Length: 136
Image 1 (cartoon, helix red, strand yellow):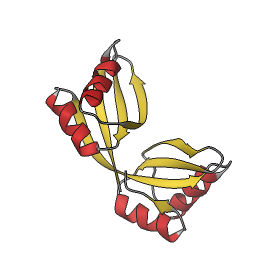
Image 2 (spheres, one colour):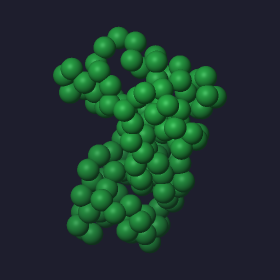
Image 3 (cartoon, rainbow, N blue to C red):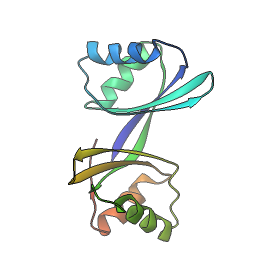
């Protein structure tokens, strides 16, 4: 199971650098990030090498943050790999509420981060389908 940190911020210059400064000063390595714009505000989702510590230092720095369980699954870095996961979850009536990913090893391995209602059930489904679900 993975942990994802969501940070609600005003959409203004300097907000991202303040977040990355807090992480840098706490010696936390940023591993994945996505930003969703919604006009005047945005949601930044991150994963780090120490998500609990990152959550704590960001909260202590007065950022509005949440820590959520997510599914982190390795897939081949090939066309159609995400589609296979999506079809497995569709077959099991699982809704993917949010997703993003990154390449771990180009041409070999990618990582999907999935927000779903029941992380443990989805992890079980994916493991039984031959996927490697990882801690993050």
